[in-house]
Length: 149
Image 1: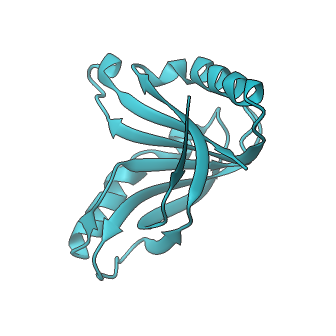
Image 2: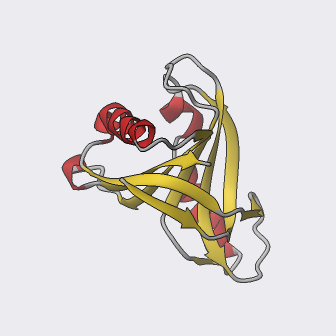
Image 3: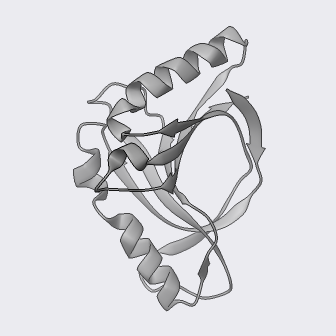
């Protein structure tokens, strides 16, 4: 577990309601759409795709807000999506190598480490998709972040 503070950044984003059960249906290929909109607006994609969960509690049926965000640089105006300033974010994190189906165990372990260290969690979690490999999911690299105070 690492404790870090992500500095603010500007990102193109989509925000939707979702549940863990309906996550893939709710979001689909929105990251690809965000990249396309950013490139058409002459914005430079400046980081990995962020999935930001607000008030997700691990229950598959709980509805929460999900933002998919891509950091960008430049002054272009996207046609479909909006730009927002993302605030700094203090968090505990770990890097997961492999399949996303293993995230439940990753979160459980990280949350146990956070509690053991005496940190207070916030209601925000993030996943940064550093390497995405749909054909060979064992090659995925994802940074899992849990907000702390």
